[in-house]
Length: 242
Image 1 (cartoon, one colour):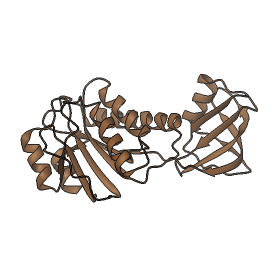
Image 2 (spheres, rainbow, N blue to C red):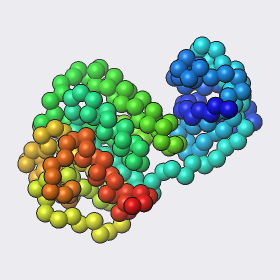
Image 3 (cartoon, one colour):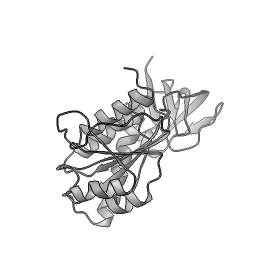
Image 4 (cartoon, rainbow, N blue to C red):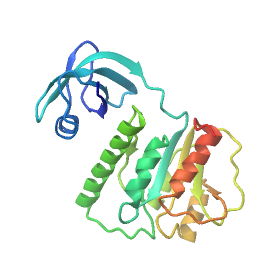
């Protein structure tokens, strides 16, 4: 029998018939073409998986019978905020999708000196909503039951002056050595856009308590660097088993 996993923003209750939201209903009914009786797992971001079956399905509405609940064991012990410079094309989207799979807690699109993307406030808001949907889809695929928040695009100086973490790291190909000795709980990881961060921005990060981190002798692309950095941190302090 087929089984599906989907996110719905609406409340879920064991032993009840629950309506799914518009996005989940559309995906199940029109894309996956579920039928009555199909088994599925639904999550709403509260950290639990809800198991049940399709009670009814039309083109616009899906109702599920929720039979059981199980706490998901897929969240990293690290609370990692990824602050990533916005890039053109699909590089940023690809990076945040993979960062979600690797357990990141939140994502901040950073507007730094070398970010070559200019949008109106309305279009930035639409971008933010689109990126949040990408993160949700990555959670559906990876088994996560807590949704990382994609925050509002923010200029770098403002973010640096407000970020709160007990370990602050900035990727810098010119850094000398890495000090990854103390076990943190909350990590802020700053990575620049295409072309990297300007020297003045690296200095500003240092003034705000950030430690420069180098990922080997090669210069990585902006969409590659988050994957490598998050993997290193996850293997060092988190739940990635090497």
